Length: 116
Image 1 (cartoon, rainbow, N blue to C red):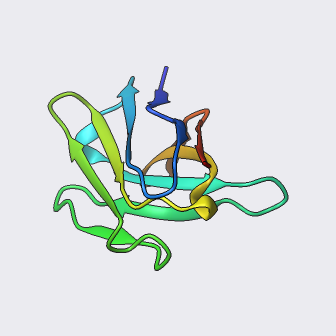
Image 2: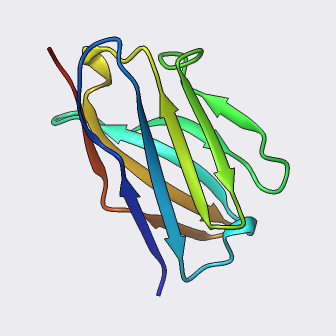
């Protein structure tokens, strides 16, 4: 059974930092491209950052470039999203996503709230 479990969300002040983690199990993690999405009520899910396999090439939404960093550790089957200089508009539920061939898995999400 495949599981993706996000952690690390919470309340942070504007300008602050958080690191989200996504722990994967039940899959050959190193094969998968890994993505972080976010969603706010009434809006479509937005792709925030991606990291490919096996090259670990990264890509980012324009709105987070220079502030967010995605990285992975295949030895522990985790992907991370380091977020800095957070803004109120970064408030969302953040989801981890794993994709390989026709396989596509999602975590349940972790809430990030940026507010003073």
